[in-house]
Image (cartoon, rainbow, N blue to C red; front, side, top):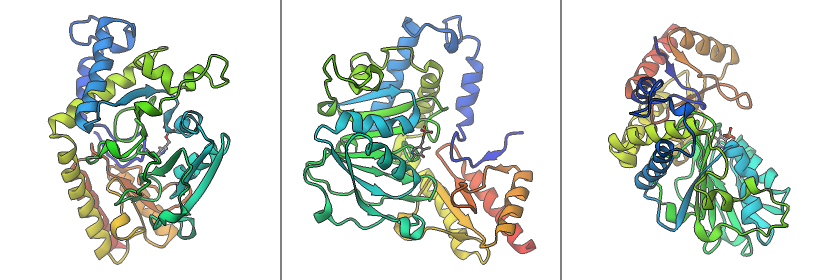
Length: 359
Ligand SMILES: *Cc1c(COP(=O)(O)O)cnc(C)c1O
């Protein structure tokens, strides 16, 4: 029996997608082969990777002057690739809203001056800090934010106004969850395993004029230059072929469900069920309030470690898995990505009500 999986990532995938992948496991369409067995240079595979890119462009309304790249190494490798490629003058601004934002900031320091503009560390990253524009570096190459903070359950409700400085965002845990105006960003990146597919690739959406040319004697490795991926359709070397195929199936699913506006409506509805319950409960409390609440990752606590542990254990036995909070925060966290059905959240809340009564 399939469980309700509230994992932060790798995370739940749409059942329809998994079934289609299962149907095509031995033979994808008329190819006589599994996608895993195909040459990445074959006609069949070319249709998969270009089809995947086309669907991302269509569903996310990516403007024509942006490239969509598939790069291995996850979002974590982008913490290095972004500064390596974008820090032309050696400076970038960062807002520190959690563990991933911190990692991006620390990695950027290897390559130049990374400036901390604001942080919410004082209150365990439970809010998005107000930004004072007069603190922004006018000579920064870019301004980096983590749009949705997977571990702490916060997200930006407004984007910072960075003027001519390109805004770069880690959107690993909110990509495809609601419409996003790509034109407001210089670059966006996301590890696939939260809301797009299985692990193995990061999707990078980058404005063409930010793709830097390196000289042949540059010490930046070929595989860490965006240009390599942009010039070769993400096929300079063998891409993670099966992961990209799975992302294509997820994109088809998102499109068939009505695209990002429909995803947003679905996600707002799910999140409301959970937050409304948390706000009314005597036992469970949300750790984030108001406009900064994430639609995708909902951390909550009882206030007692013993009770938290009991809840996680009993929830698991009822088929609600991966509700343990991140090891750095404790408590619980329900990640309710696109593929989580409304019933999953409704049933979780029912179970939480019962647990509250019994304890
Ligand atoms: C999961 C996550 C990452 C790390 O992704 P990897 O693909 O494991 O490197 C980075 N940023 C955010 C916001 C995440 O949720």
